[in-house]
Image (tube, rainbow over all chains, first blue to last red; front, side, top):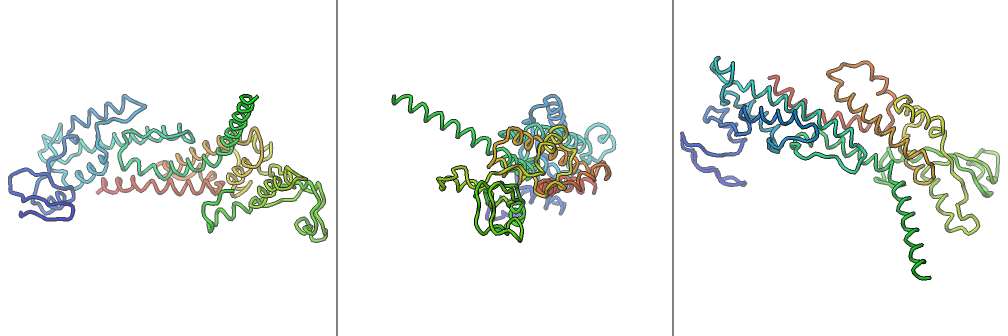
Length: 183
Length: 184
């Protein structure tokens, strides 16, 4: 296939059977037309995901750093469009065709435990100064964002005057101190 | 009151809720606020004043040397009285806030700004946190658990809570996307 010149950059010529890195959308398109095979990313290997899930299970307080920012979207799209390109594991290997089924189970487990954690953290920290979200993927943040923002806004409205009163007291005290200095 | 949006209907409705104000002075020719018959407002009369006006009446005191605290004295409205606060403190989900006031939190937040009350800030924050947390859990789990127990809670939602409910439901789009795709 000849090079593609696009606004976002040029995609070099593709010569089978060479490997090449191309955007996900193009890979999925070519896959659909049965013109390429997709090599799953390293982090979607069974062993890696198993490790990530284990880490996720062991740490209640934080999220694993073994997943990329857009793991949810990429994995979903890849398993949807190119499931037969995933290597086979366990029982599936004997059946011949790989279908990414085991990986799907692992990913589902990851998603559930991370979601549970995010919600627990959310309920705990509601109305606090901030909500810890380090390690959450784009999709997961997006899912929680509108809720978090609304609740933080409302909590601020319900708590603000107390702070201003505090500030007022502080100001008074500062003024008193100034007087002390003068006399 | 901080206005976020001039044409926000919710804000207009919220700010037309009334709080009781006791007048410290006689006011000429404003008796119609109290009833049709009286000509003037007499001192020590309590009248319900919408809270777009009440804070202003409190604040103008600083320009009136005769009444430095303002011409009126505000009190907590009935939907924020001691019994209500005590009940909410005991169990934030026990009351139907919608029946108390459709914009109960907005009213509470406004009262915070113009009145000193030891319990109010704590109760407001606790109530909100508890109720919204429960609401969000319920809305998210609704599909799985099936309708039933929480329906009563949904009926008693105050306007701020309704907004949160809508927001949480919007967040479900992600799981719907994932669910649909993995089913095919």
